[in-house]
Length: 139
Image 1 (cartoon, one colour):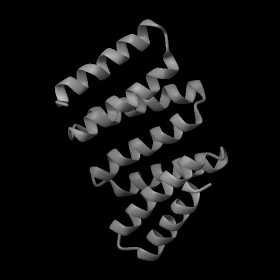
Image 2 (cartoon, rainbow, N blue to C red; image 1 turned 60 degrees about the vertical axis):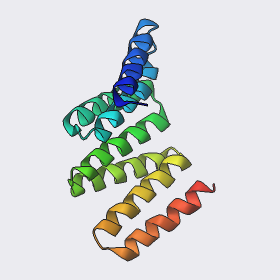
Image 3 (cartoon, rainbow, N blue to C red; image 1 turned 45 degrees about the vertical axis):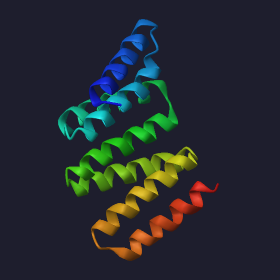
């Protein structure tokens, strides 16, 4: 699928969700749009839209959407080489997921932290988080 077509479908989805007043569903679609812009390397747009997705998710109380939004924003910072803020966002996602017993978020955050520590050449920490991610995925 061409990127223009993909963007068009996402924008149509946003309009449809607005039309039917599916505010909470907008969080999911905004995350898709934010990740679209991340893949296009338009990090400013990605970060802005993902922040909006997080704001909506917090208002709606969607545990998985809040955790995923923190992770997606962290990934934007990671690819921008803003490593400290990426790590903090991954940790925020981890703590939030642990507090809410959200195993998918625990696994994902630990995986991202494993990647972060591997990139930082802190291999023992990287392996620790990778092992936790594997265990969390199986729960």
